[in-house]
Length: 464
Image (tube, rainbow, N blue to C red):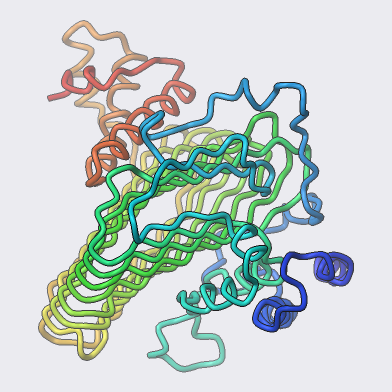
């Protein structure tokens, strides 16, 4: 309750100064978010969907807006900001949650494509910004097919509401009908503050027949105990394709909570990949709703945690229409006292005949104190379907280690190669070559930090 009381004070203090105040649509969105947060609160382990992830760390983080630690005498120019294709992307950069035009670079865009900061959109036309926000899906607490006093998974409802209460910044991408945007779009969030909070909103609207690739990066440059509460809302129109990746590499003192909600129309494709290698506690909720026939989604993720860090990947894939396909592969490596959570649910609704849905979660435990909590679920209400799910956890394969050692490879190098091969399989799920190459590079970097051994992509062939 102390956190809620603090947020009440913050809301009353900050809300009059948020952009677009006085515009009825934005005022309503924020007031609704504030009211829903007061009703929902911060999720606790008593909620089924948060049974394995405790947000007690919020008590030690300032909920006030972050004060940027970046100075004006050249520090930002020295940053090596991540990119999936350096110099060949359209990029928006946010420092401690605030849009930074000097670090951003948006080139000429084809007709029908718009890329703006949310604050810029609000400043230009608050009424239009509210209209754009209203177009996008909101996360659902549950499938709506079960009854009971607490049927929901508790997927970020209170946190999404909190994001709405302080709605001010973020990115808005619109891709017009039939447009193939060749250059990827990148949204980079850089943490420099010692503490503080930001609540960005990312909106991606891909019209029928369009194609686009989007990469999110979350990194720290001297950042401390910050709290990022991110909401991403996506619409993929009929016959369109969106490839979306999120790379979370913030400081190990940060708290990172994110919600991704996507609706996918008929014959459309949505692919998403989430890499978690930073933050002391990180959770990403992914909800994909396959609304039109022949829609498809591929949801994949990888993580590497050690020390006392915690990574949570929770997903809900909702098959609403017939002849839809979903594939989910999530794999992770856990060392030290690290803990990981996988909660994956596939729902097949009564009208979703001829569904093809598959889910796989695998975890590699590198220490006796590492922990994984896995909860794969299928909820099927149709009879003509092909669905499967599975979850495994184990140690490195001793036979494979022996095979590599017998060929003269040192023990530490052999161990690093096997870990790399284990995670590299997830990167292969990524359809976009630039995203796949970047993901492989970041996985190799994380393995190097976990094992002290540098692994090159070419070395992975040794295992074959």
